[in-house]
Image (cartoon, rainbow, N blue to C red):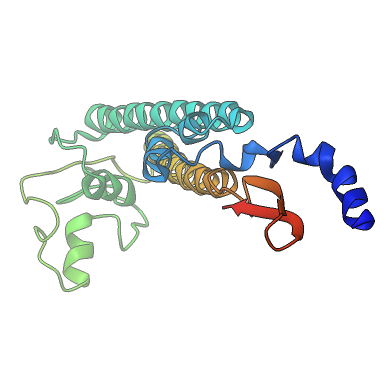
Length: 240
């Protein structure tokens, strides 16, 4: 009996407190009430917004600035490429007599690959086999109007004149610059997609790391003394 009285005296301070709570870091559950679909969707529309929605601000600016820069590159390269194409078309109209308003790549590339269609004005001392578009199509076993309408014509002039060769080279340079600008545009669009995918995956990572309640959010310790059967002890309750 003396031992039980001594044990009761030792446990008295504990009995005065009905409950002791040990809290786990709330950061792991701060986003438990938010939607992962909304976070991923926000990142798909504008990279970094999913992280902002989840309160993870460190990666917001990098994603936003990268996206803004890529949009500038994509739009500027598209506009510049369109200007190169317009310049090439206008140059062919002025110097080769191209009689079409079309800016299709098939037409403009053919104008750069062949000196003329339906014959070159003047006599070349050493003409190339592919100087005339129609002759090249016949040699290839194709109809002359298979790719281009028959009424479309152009003529850069004889290769004996250095000036015509110089003009064709300038025209091809314009087309080359157009192709480069389109490659830059395509790369920028691809990078925009990659930036969104990266932000979506990062938003999912943040959500997984901050939406779990962990092993236990509360640990309750309820001490008791059983006077009926003479048993005393401490009851632990874990709330997950």
